[in-house]
Length: 430
Image 1 (cartoon, rainbow, N blue to C red):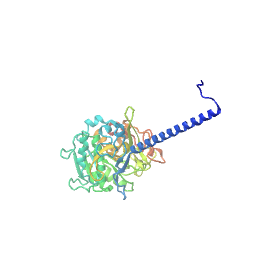
Image 2 (tube, helix red, strand yellow):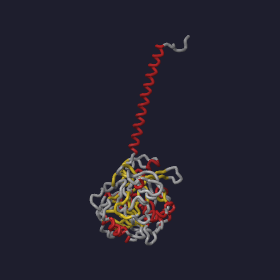
Image 3 (tube, rainbow, N blue to C red):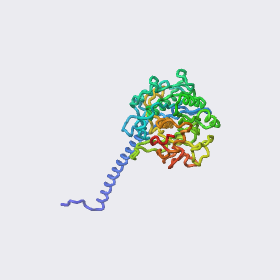
Image 4 (cartoon, rainbow, N blue to C red):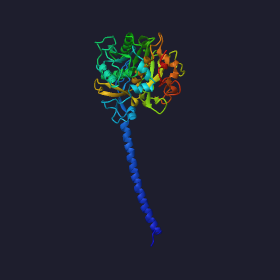
C-alpha cells in the first residue's frame, strides 16, 4: 500500500495552490494582528502623551509680564510611569508629579533640606492674589510630611506690593496656580525656610518690580520671580530700579516659548534659570536631564539679550551682551512637579505643573539652603565660580539659532541650561 502522495505535476500544482492559500491566509492574519497591535500601541501612546495649558495669558501690552506656569491637563507623567500609576495626570485626587523627595534626591539636596534653612526667608513675587494660598500650602506640606508653615507660627506671610496684609490685589485664577506652584517648590526644596508671598497689583513690570523691592525690604535674601515678557529699551532702568540688590539671590524664569530672550531673565543682576527634562536613569546619579523642548513654540527660553549689558562674570564670547541662562532645573510638564491648588476654575486640587516657573523657585530655594550670600555680592556669579558642583546638561536644544550654543546644549556653558543643574550646594555659595 502506498504511504506517500503521488508526485505528479497536477498534484504538485494542487499542493502549491493549497499552500499559497494557507500562506495568504496566515499573512492576512498576521497583518491584522500587527495592525491591531500597532493601533493598540498608538492608542496607549496617545493616552500617555502629556498635554497642558498655560496658566496665564500671554502679555498683551508693552512691559507686561506673563507667568511661566504650565498646568498638565492629561496623559501620564514621568512620575506616574515610574511608579506604575495608571490614572491620568488630570486626576485631581492624588499627586501625579515629582514631590519633595524626588527633587531633593535628583539635585543632591536630601541632607541639606533636612538640616538647613531655619530662620531664612524665601520671597515669592507674583501678580494678583491667591485667596487660598495659605490653606493650599498647608495641604501640600501636610501630604508630604513637611513642617507646618502658617501665619500663626510665623513661617508664612502674605502681603501686597506695598506691604499691606489686608489690602491685597484682585484675585486671579491663573496666577493663583502660579503662586501655588512657587510656594510648593520652595517648600519641597527648603522645608525649614520661611516663605513671604508678595503680590503685585498687576502684571506690569513696574508693579512686579515694586513687589521685588518690597520682598527685599522684608528681609528676604532669596527672591523668586516666575514671570517674563519681551525685552525693551526700558530694561536698563528696570535693572537699576528693581533688581540691583547686592547680597540678595534673585532668580528669574528664562521663559517657556523656546529659543528667545525674555526680561527680567536678561537682567545682569539676576540668576536666569532655564528648564530641563528630568527622568530617572540607571546612572550612579539615578537621574538624567536634557534640554526641555516640546515643540517649536514650547520649551525653555534662552538667548542673547538685545539690551542688557553682560555681567563681568559671564565670559562666553558669542554674545556681546547678557546671555540667558545661568543654571537650570526641571521644567518639562511631562516630567513635572506636583502642586496643590484649589482657587478658581483651574484649582481642582492636585495637579502637575511644569515650565520655568518651576525651576526658578527651585533654584531660589537651593540658594536658601546654601546660606546667606556674602555682603555686596551678586549671587548670579556664584555658579560661574563653582561649575564642578553642577550637573552638566549636554543634550537637547530649544530651537534654531545662528550661534549654536545659544540654543543647543553642549559640554560646559550653553544658553538653554547655563552651567547645569544643582548637585548639592557648592555652586550656590559665595
